[in-house]
Image 1 (tube, rainbow, N blue to C red):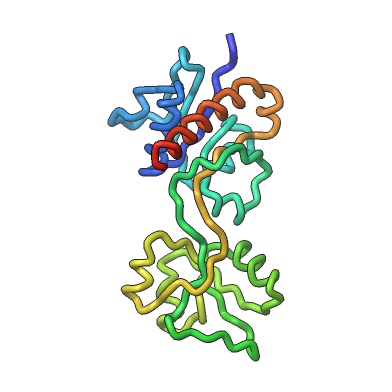
Image 2: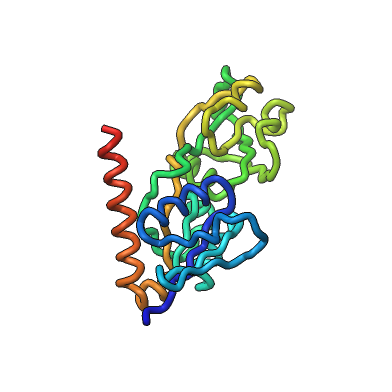
Length: 216
């Protein structure tokens, strides 16, 4: 019998949407959506074992081999650079990484730009490509506050609707990169389970193609 695939899903609404996609592709595990405190859920008949993980930790589980495959945001992949295969853009959780700041902001190239962000590596690469000197201020809370109180000139952060920015007198200034959920795989496990992982990937890709065609 083929070995079960270990799949790490991000906790929360995105993870539930991802599971619905896996279920539609033939990888159901009904116990996963039942109200309980279990950590691991498996369906031997479908050949899958799921577990929930903090979204920022999914790539770690996959990279380290605790999970064969998983779903992580492109922001996590770009920021931390885990050594995994990126198999498929699921098109879920779409948003964008942006530079944002006061609506009337004008960059003064005569001085170093102060940038507050939860994503220092992404911000550093973005501005390095422009040869723009910056001072990174790494933060973990509501970074919209930083330019309001004068801690930073701008922020680099994920923007979905832009409502929070607008309510605080800020606006997106430049797009950095589009963000969405990606199906990823452990490199070693992919070599040993190529057929199983590729079959799952192909089924999900076919479902996504059908959904996109239905929207046209």
